[in-house]
Length: 355
Image (spheres, helix red, strand yellow):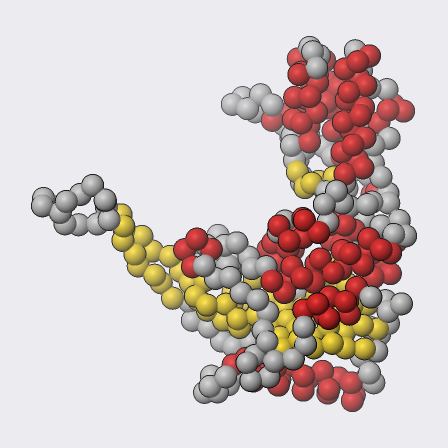
């Protein structure tokens, strides 16, 4: 079995605002002295793990990332007839296993039942919480110390196994991420543009007021992005308690989501859905490496085909690494959707990464 699976993707997006900064502008990064568009690693991971494609493929094997675990327990206890004071005390004992609570707020009496930081809870852990809560309702008693062994070291939650979990209060139950995702960046320089727009009142006949009912502005840019993903299959199987079949299923689902699913930012305004134009998949035990250095010098803005030039640059960098360091992968598969170069099939790519 190959330990590492590496994915290199080139995806072209039309005018879009896929991932915004605190000012509402598309995120950027400076690389090789040039401004590039950027989609953050956090955005990509959430996009993929919450996509319909991934959720349908991994049904019953996904966790929930939340601060509201305590509220869920509290509502279940109250609905079961437990007095409010007892429900709050029991909730704090149960949900407190997963993290510290927020301070109470005057305008939000249930804030004290919210965990301070987001925690990723696996399906087995949620089932254990629900079963304990039902037991307490039936027996009308507070949870005892032995009842609170709710954390699970070996998860059957593929999103936790892939992307990891940190519990500051219970480090023994931390999960090291088996999948690393780089920030996607454009292979060329970009200029962010402003879209000035107006909205018209449908009931205004224009006889008295011909002006717009609303005036707004949004920022956007277009670009060809390079994205890089590295999966440690050996660690993924370990995180899934040795379930290799589930690990293969997770790798397959994640790969398809990465190839097909676009970030949700401003999709209603731009409809910037896109499939990857090019995918290079690699397998082997060699130390992983990104091919982003291929675009340290941006693709030539005078070139009439950014995608073809980007593929040439990426494959040239791959060859150069192989010649200098020896083969950086044992086996490879390429998918190319450019009309002039098309090769490969998605079904074969998914079989390659999950075999």
